[in-house]
Length: 259
Length: 109
Image 1 (cartoon, one colour):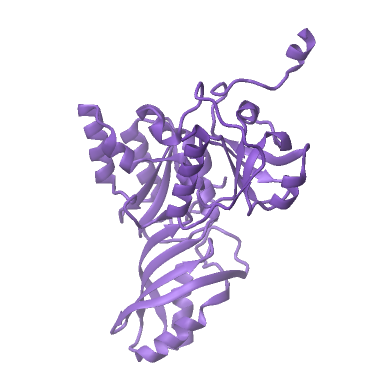
Image 2 (cartoon, rainbow over the protein chains, first blue to last red):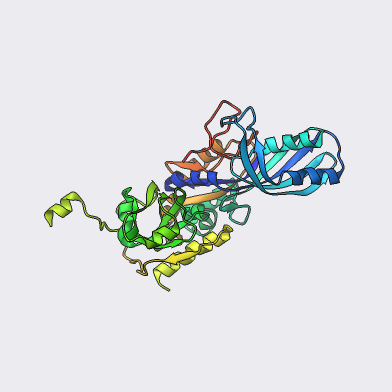
């Protein structure tokens, strides 16, 4: 299997796992066990569009109970003899191998997945940012031998890219270090937010310069947050911003004691 | 252009590039100080790596874990991780834990 595999370096390791929960796109080759007319193939493929029931295969890493998954897009890119080239946009946790198998059952001839390539996971796509191990190695070599980092900066992306698909909250400079220390985000620290913040969903918290501070779980939705002048807006889950980069504006017992 | 404007522009740019849109509601207008912090695309090279992600085109053959181990060594960083496995012979996209030779793993965040 090849394709899009987002990798987080050092500090980014903490948040890269979050893309697991985002939408996926694959291109796969399905091999049918007998020839079938193209019209029939297209008909059955379209049948998989929308919500499907899927039982994880025997060799899987999750509980084998039937799950409902959404296939947002499914398209026959090409077909020849017993081979079908498919593009699938689906929910995370949809088994492509199982999809191929189930297609075979519906076609009545049997089928299995022959090849698979991931072309998208959330914000990461098969575009000019997609790099091979060789390109990474070259970029590092150029930087280490000449000191020029322009190639390196094209192959390694800022951590913020891995959170581009999430609802966002921008916070004031005065709130940054408290979050960096693990505090929850309170309403007075919010400078701006996107309209799609939902309660109990992941939200990305940034400085006004656009630096990722942390990932949190929103307590309220956008509409409610806008009306709040105090109280917790989001629970801090994964902190990326190191402590002490922004000045400390919050009061500790000691500092209030000396005042 | 103010630092805040540049920061928002950066976030909007990477969001649009990923196929999403930021629909902002501004609550407080304050700008951000240039005395601390840095625009994400102006980090020093070493920081750029430590706060870096790679959109890797995984080669066929090695497991996702092997690939991450190589990258960790290449960049000489103390840790690295991936988002969702692409196993050499068997694939699932989702959350789970390793199970035997054929199983798949995903980081649970």
